[in-house]
Image (cartoon, rainbow over all chains, first blue to last red; front, side, top):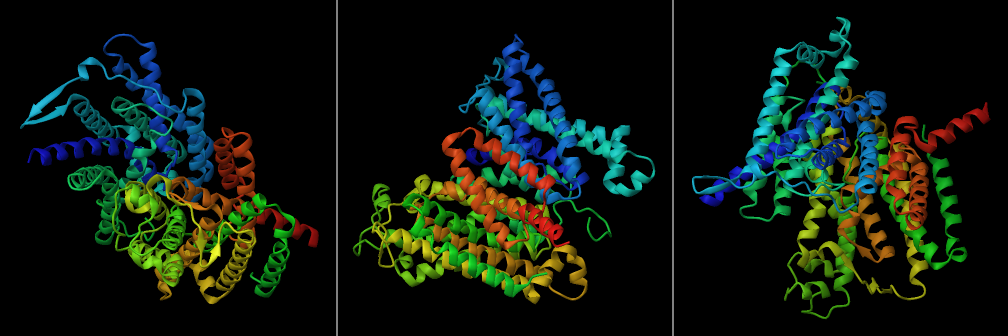
Length: 294
Length: 342
């Protein structure tokens, strides 16, 4: 029973990482139908930015300073990628996959040249040591913090999309790009803002990964493939769908690990997604539309 | 669009010239060429699925690996006396051969498995995805997850797959002594023959009604469906054929390299396979072979001279070719020829 509860908690903890990694992907995919294969490297950049911030800023609350640095740094990087690469390829989704994968190779090697292949350590601050004991299981504070950040990001994003003018424009372009453009909305700029926002969130995810283990040039890779599966399962760019898919996959992965080892659990996650497609090919949250190619 | 007879003549001509390579090249260079020709066989499949079917698979390494492991398992079993198990299983503490290894002792079964296992796996996989009208970017992402899952599974099942090191140290294949003087040449010719047959086969497929329908599905899947055709069936068949080619390529590559390991089947190698074709020209069979040879020889040269530069070069190549030259080298040459003809 305790094992089960522990794995459920682990599932939510992993799910919050999947969610932070997948939100940006889902946002841009819903809007532009492109997947940025270098998204994992945005996590990596966030991790290294956290490391650098902790080198410079003193005091016990310096982790709090690392969060905005990683967000803004990764967002700026994302904006650059969008302007230089994504925008030029917007009509060719599959080619975007390949080009951004090339970028991911370059970024990984760049990190290897700058910081070394072994990776750098980010020590979690003292206030994240220890944990809370609930129902006989020990919940590590770091994991709780990560879940908290994921919920905060989600709430912020929901507010942004539903309450602000930017959110209104994003929803307009999301629903009907041509119509939105016809009413005078600069769809290209909306794309840019959403893409940068998404990579910024990935930067935050990178800080979370840095709390759990060393930041290496390939740190993003271990979470990015599950994040891709979350996007596949979530339904076209739907935030609610992405959250549901992240939680489901997180739970599937960690509950499977009760009886099988981690690598088989990974296979089971993939099998689960393929089976899920058989029942709901349009994803957890379906986009209600009569258009043929939504 | 496809002058089939001319393609056959060109393919036969090139293969005829290439057949003399063993008399010109040294052992090491010949081995490299043979490896890359084996990889070209896989590239033909990518032309079929990606170039003409619009299906981007980032998991061709899986089918390459299935073919490679099928033959490698047979070669591990050949020199054993009854009741013995391969060396790495002994180290892993396994006393008896796992049941799913046993049939690979039979050469006929192993050879069939080289193409049929990847073909069947690919057909089932494609049927489960395309059958639900999931495709495009989703398919690419799912195939990548497949490549990751396959590679991790191989590594984790150390006692039965050889784990991270894979299967290596082969002595004999179908009566041919792999350490003998003639082995290199013989295997080279076999590879060349299989590649020429593969080229002719895929060219014929692309020139047939099936090829026309496949391109129609690529350019307007819904229109094809509305005309009463089963669009998914064309994609499933194309994907399965590409997987069989990848399986054969994997088996041949394993023979030349003397090893098959998870490092050759995972996410990164799988996506590199696409770049060979992207550079050569995604719709051109000759371009795909040329691209495979060019990228791999260049990679071999760069890797030994400047190992750190390889990711930069490969990444930049990816970005530049895809953004600036989507038709690859074949398109560049075709434009030249048109200009000359005019």
